[in-house]
Length: 223
Image (tube, rainbow, N blue to C red; front, side, top):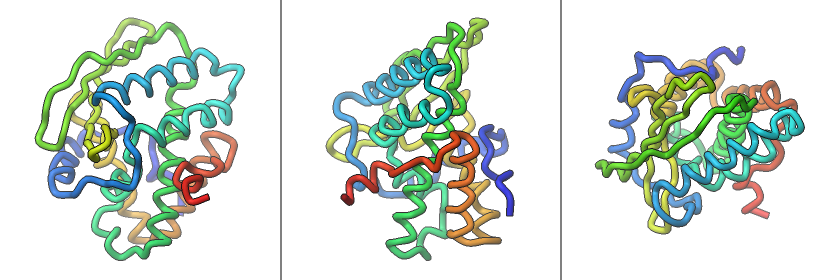
């Protein structure tokens, strides 16, 4: 077993798959939502990302992760994203397995952000608007690179009744993070089961951050 299935890049062949998945599942109520409008959660994420990028050298890998993890836990619907990423295999898991893989997935998302946003060279992260959608709200944004090239990033936002949470991310309006993960996870689940997936996620967190990730927000809630 290796970690190659967990990449930090998306593939075009998975375009629009996750929109269909989102229309067929219920809204998770396991994570508290960030209060305010659908755009507020993305702005909060972007503010933290920008500050982390500017402090990147002083923070290091582990420090970036430690700063980003609480915000990721606050603005992302990690339980729903985990369930969608695992797909039909989710139905075979018991409660303890679901808890463990959800916690590992949350740490993994935080580590990916700590790795992707690892330096500041004048980039800008801007929320540009939103539009209603059948699954909730699609928040539009741009990440403007140091050379001025914009990258369109759209956030699928779902309400759990108390506020809005990110349940998927689309790059260039086409490539779904959740659908990409579902494709990547399928092989490891087939070959090594849920324990193999959890181990691979935890190894990836360690390789990206130099730490085991520490307790997730869901673990803290239990205490």
